[in-house]
Length: 349
Image 1 (cartoon, rainbow, N blue to C red):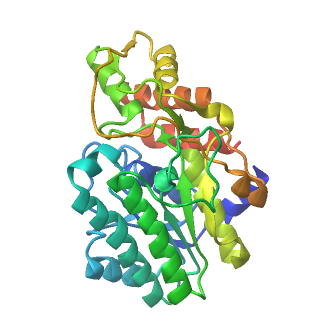
Image 2: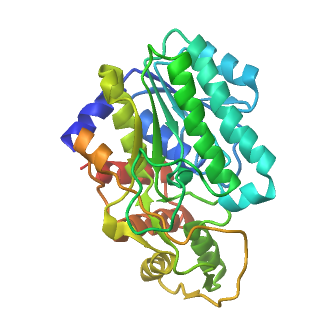
């Protein structure tokens, strides 16, 4: 972790512009950055009560309300802040929601990327850009081997496909307009952690059921995903942005995911959750139907691991344990700004 701590020290006093800053991953990103002394400006739609942003006590983060789909909103916010680093995380991030509203999904995930990168090309101060996409950008053949960065981008559903398009937009902007600024994309596996309240995600579904005293209902108990704690990709994004700012040979496309043993079934996640949330139970009744979701998805992360000597810190058991601890602490009325800071310190030890 010496490399990670060195990379994070890069951000002290740096101006970092984060889109989607008040979402689940964005809140953790802002917490890490603000705690290490970065000057953070977030850009997002108004935050909702379900966001962990308020609970984390992010009072020293500048927050600009705006729509990533609006070209002028994005440019005005970014150029007024004049950032050193841009982390693009704003997205319509749910597979099932993309079936319900594909137009909004493509508008947000494709044109949102266009608007952010177009603002970057007008920005004189930016020295590093990271666009966060997803592990679902690949044409998924339901194979056991993990996908590598040079494989075909062809996400199946509107969410996954729009993120494939975001990757292509990034490549075109790099070639056409941003040849003097290092720009990378990161394709992260499924992320869990405290504060996620999204619909149709396994951990938030588990938390809601446990809080009500109901059994957790699993739609696809056998589906396999590369699960990781939110601090793994957040720290990886920051490591990449710092290193490519110093040496642009590091820019590129990277998979960010767990070790192979943490690619587990939905059922295993539910089992681990119930082990840590005493009294919680799960059930897989079968016969539940819905839009297509991949049954098997794994990533090969050798490129990022080899390039930056990086390894995930917490395996899936520890990741679920830490996640449950966060929700239980919030339910117990603890100081979540302090609690979250302690989890970050533990992760970096």
